[in-house]
Length: 144
Image (cartoon, rainbow, N blue to C red; front, side):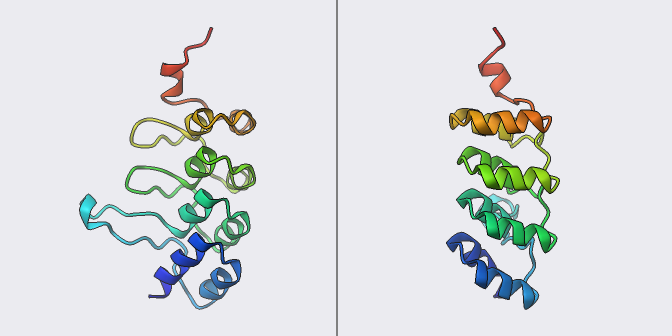
């Protein structure tokens, strides 16, 4: 139950609760198996925090050993979710902590594609500086 509470605290942005639960031994990479998807895993606490732009919680989870490249059932990472929702600080932190910007999701899209679709040129520039390249976007937006 403590791990489910950690997920809830990450979704709600409760950094104090996140630190307390980690201190009590909550699994930083916990994810419930989803029976509707052949047992593949749903989101981890880091994915929830990154998706919502809770940068302090993202930092806390990474410092506690969260895997910045862990994928959900659709191969989303914390970086793709943060980039797609325009959370610049979370993107920057994830990249600094080892998130792989070249990881594609189940459709072949990378964090670069997510940021491009969201109209976030600041994030696409940061991702490009980190060595990211478009996945599917290169098919949709060929160079001029």
